Length: 82
Image 1 (cartoon, helix red, strand yellow):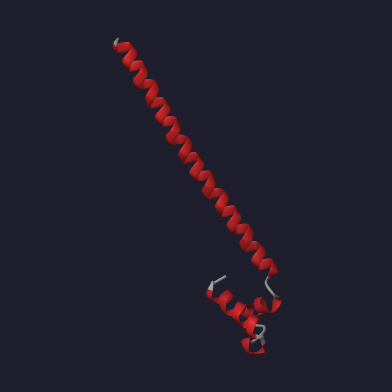
Image 2 (cartoon, one colour):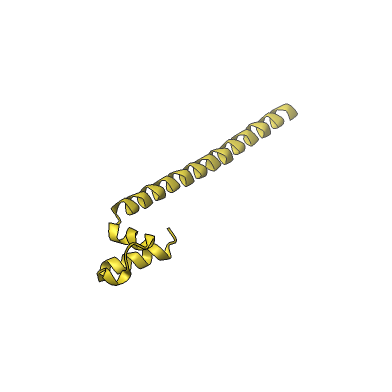
């Protein structure tokens, strides 16, 4: 009788440990996927950024020569410390 209880308890503990470990791995995988999606979107933003905004950051152009939309992009780009 005691062996059956110990065996059932052991099997229960193995099941609980397996579930906890699986959740840990799933959570870690989700973080990796979220980070890769974030970096993909960030890369798309930088690729599609108008050149005039990038040149403002480098000091090759002044904000006064930009239009309203480009000036807004430039302000956002500079405030993001990219």
